[in-house]
Structure formats: C-alpha cells, structure tokens
Image (cartoon, rainbow over all chains, first blue to last red; front, top):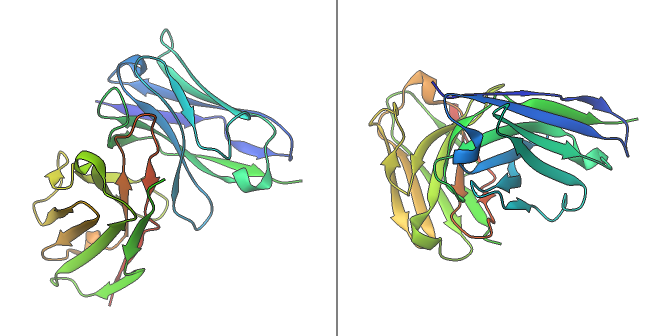
Length: 119
Length: 110
C-alpha cells in the first residue's frame, strides 16, 4: 500500500529555516515524479516544487532560490528545505506522488504538514 | 502559465441531484492533461479524475469528467451525502512543469 507521511512542520520566525520530510512506503521515491503542493489557510492549492524521476528539480517563482527539493533513496524520503521563510509561506504543505516520471496527475498525497511563519 | 478558472465558486444542491462543475483554461491544455480532486475539511486532496475522463482507482462511477481544449466539466450524476466537499481542477504535463490548480468549487448541501 502506498503511503506518504510528512513531518517537520511548525512555527518559525520570518527569515528562519525549516526542513520538511515525506517518508514514502509502498513504492520508491526515485521511481516517480514527486511534488510539494501547499495550501494557505482558507485558500486553494499551489504547486511549489517538483523532482523528476531522473533527478531534475523545479520550483515556482516565489520560492526559487529559497527552497530546495531533494530525496534520499536509502531512506525512501522526499525533502523540502525551506530557507528565508516569509509570512506568505504559511500553509499546509503536502507531498504528492505523480503517476509518471515527469509532470503527471497526483495519485497519492500525504496528510500535510503545517508551516506557520510568524514572529 | 495556464490559469484555470472554476465555476461556480459555490454550488448548493440536495442529495440525489446532479452536479455540474466547470473548469476553464486560459489556453489549451496539452494532451488533455487535466485532473480533478476532491478535498474535505482537514483532509488532503483525493484524486478523482485524470486525463480529463479516466476515473482513479476506487472512485464511484457517478463521477465523470469530460471536455477538451480549454473547457472541462466534472459531473456527479446523483449526489451522495459524502460528495459535499471542495473540488479542484489541475492541469499538468508540461516540461518543465508548470502545474496549476483552479481556485476550487465548494459543493454544499442545500
């Protein structure tokens, strides 16, 4: 059974750093397109970052240069390193699996990790 | 970037009725890479439809998707109490990825 479990969320001051983890089971993270999607309180879904099966990484403009997506095959875990956090980064962050090796529909989602950026 | 506009913002219907949700794209969606998700309060989104009209595993056949180019529709043929939720459309498939989501349609009980 495919499962994704996020961890690492919390309250952080503006300018701070946080690393989200997404532990996968039932498949290997290097085999699929993996993404981070966020949802600000009371708002819709926003694509944040993705990594292709081949390892290429991509970011939405508002986080490029501040966030880094990565994965660890040995731990079967996806990460999102978030630096220079801003109030507007406050959201629930979901990791999601794409059905293919590149941009594709998202067939499994984690439960989400809440990141609150506030002083 | 392709902008997806969903309508209506809120749809008020009763169980047993038919629901029709719209998603309009600002430009043609390549290869019909259009998906629909259902999200209930406090939960992660759940994939319902991909490739415009293919149902995801375990999705009841009262859910159907249609459309092409820039206009897409999610239809729920006969609403069950558990169908009241927020629905999002999602376009994908570009390389590099430029995934976007619609702003959502809230389906509420009348």
